[in-house]
Length: 295
Image (cartoon, rainbow, N blue to C red; front, side):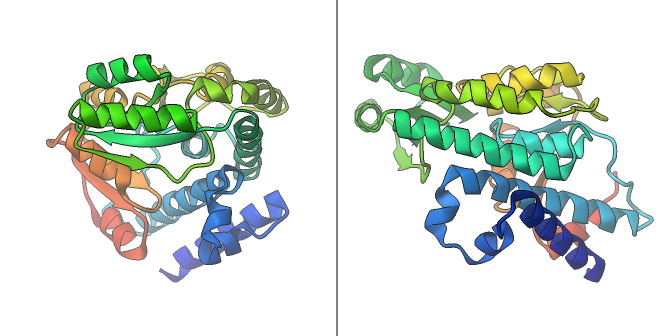
């Protein structure tokens, strides 16, 4: 795994050079408060995810039992660091442009958050219809539909607190405040749209080498012309993660690999469909296991 370690170091250095500050040191050393700032967390997530993806591809090419992983379908949870990571994997953007784009996206969202502060919370044990009624009564919005019984809400701090109390009263099993700096995937982010659109206009987007499933409406993005609107509109729209996974399974996909730290998405996918094969790649051992896997 020495070559893999060198590749990871190269990724960190490329991110640092592209951004003009030591992001890699922040990833490894913190402080945690700085990483929670969305202008830092977004490029950090993308850097770790792309490093895992590239190191995994390198390992697979070095083992004759596995393909190089060039074919497949990509998706991402949320339309920020994750989907821009997918754009890099699909060849739409180079890593330097992508990490600068995701940093700028985070800055714009930070600015929107200062103008219209808010927060997010995960609600467990209440279905979409029931939680939708809570949203209508409190003024919050559905932000992420992760599974049938794990849904994230977004809005002003007061409205989210009211929604959490009301959801609990109506049978929610648990609520979890999210450590975020704003009400992402809600209308409170509308001020960020113009700036992100201008940033995208300055970039050259190449045609994707493989399809990317947009998780706001579950359609396949097959052209570079579709991507800017998807990224801009996604600032304020709900992430339909459950339906994205279902759409991929319905199209015949039976194997999912999550690249990046945590393995949270792998767990969500398994809860959505227990029949599919799911793995998470985040460390040398998981990379080795994936490299040895056969179709």
